[in-house]
Image (cartoon, rainbow, N blue to C red):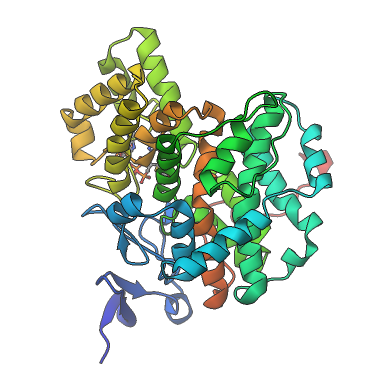
Length: 428
Ligand code: ACO
């Protein structure tokens, strides 16, 4: 007999189903509770609410475990390229040689943008935030490829849509940077790998072809791999909520980009660098920044610290930190912000406020230093996160269709005025 939970409210007890995941995560299923009892559950921010069953990514926040389709992030980050990881996340298995070749070719085939889509870039002011451009352009793709409006979660149409999206997100991102810099677009080169092609589209000039060093390509691959999925985070949940209305994949991921943009989520990678630069140039002692972050009257937070799920350490942050050292060494670079970051981390480890609240560096704390080392401009950091997260968003969108997930529609407890009579304008 399956396990049950019992909830007693007043003199009535309700039996609730208990379900257990592959890794022994337990949940009490309250789907029928309202119908049977009239009660809903309350969990603002969904900190303790499961919204789906998923077989894509596993996170254990207490032990600092992250696995994509069962593979530990430490191993995947060391041994796989972003394209292999994207395939794994999307199709559930690592690709064999033939599958990988076909996947790469398909991605290359879809890299160019429709000429009229390209013309849209000239309508944006040069100061446009690249995340706004990315979200708008992803949504616009469906105007030029109306076939993607058909909702498919498998078969050749789905495979084609996946390749198209993974490829065009990279081109759009690079073009947004070129547009803002007032530089001509570099069209994709099918002979280059995913990361080399992105770097070529970003940095080649008519007078000088950019050839990325293997160190830089490896570092970018690692950055994208570490961001490829992270179960039901804010942007992925957004993609699922939008997709649950059976909105097409492009609109759903465009919404995901908007959610990612915020500084509490993906926008933190750029916010960390701004914070470190401020610490470095202001001359104020670190203790002042810590005090500001601890002050409950102040909204100031130490960016890159804390996580909803990880309460011991973020495994991605450890890998990122190691990679930062390696890349700086291999590129013979020194970054004064790394010193500031290390000092800040050390201070927080000695401070009871941060220790008691389990606030440790998250993936965004060191990732900006890595991106700086490989020459990515600050306003593109969160765009890079979006490119990396695309396989996760697509895969979650697909899974919700496969599971025929119901329309997402949370409840609320109303706390406004009770019924009252309309007051005519003259009497107000
Ligand atoms: N600096 C100072 N205090 C913090 C920080 C921080 N960075 N993060 C959390 N706290 C405090 C909270 O104020 C709260 O204190 P209290 O218990 O005295 O009220 C306590 O720690 C618990 O934090 P919550 O706000 O409950 O944590 P939540 O899970 O809601 O938020 C979040 C997580 C948004 C990541 C938060 O830690 C934060 O704002 N961090 C800074 C932004 C950041 O780095 N975001 C990237 C996250 S990773 C990602 O999205 C890819």
